[in-house]
Image 1 (spheres, rainbow, N blue to C red):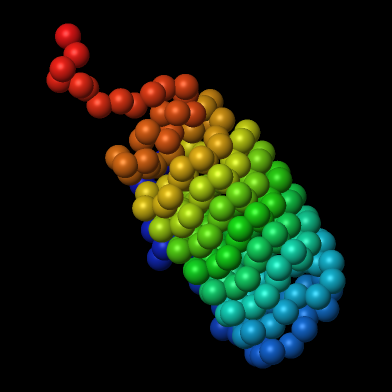
Image 2 (tube, helix red, strand yellow):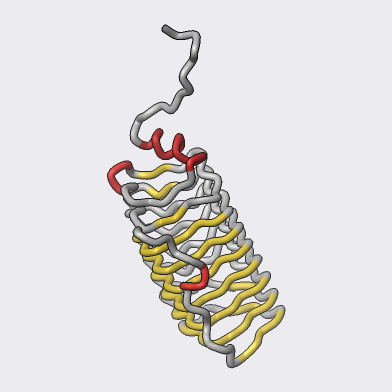
Length: 199
């Protein structure tokens, strides 16, 4: 990635057409131009189509959005623990302060997505495709990104201890200096200080 993704480059949703507050959202095939506040996802939302949606303080814990497509989404302070978006496509999405611990995204595609202050511990993004994605001040400890192309992913500012990546897919990822030892470990390297007493 020659130029890391900037949050301003993530396309914002169009102005919402309707507003929902404190409602249970049943399985729906399409939701467009909506703002949701303190709503709860109910049922299986596989193959859903979400476009121009803003969700604030919503609850979708353990919900299934398998093979769903989401474009121009903003999710703030949402509870998404264990959510499953495997096989889905997320384009121009902003996640701020979201709980995504143990989320699943096997084989999903992420394009121009920005994660800010999100808890992604133990999330599984295996075989996912990332195109200009940034994880800023996120917690990625124990997350699995095996067999996922990371050449256009920016990890700076995030906790990455125990992050599992495929060494052949890391080339081009953007990291901060303090994260180098974690990524070096993926290549089987050990980063040790020089002991001046050694001869």
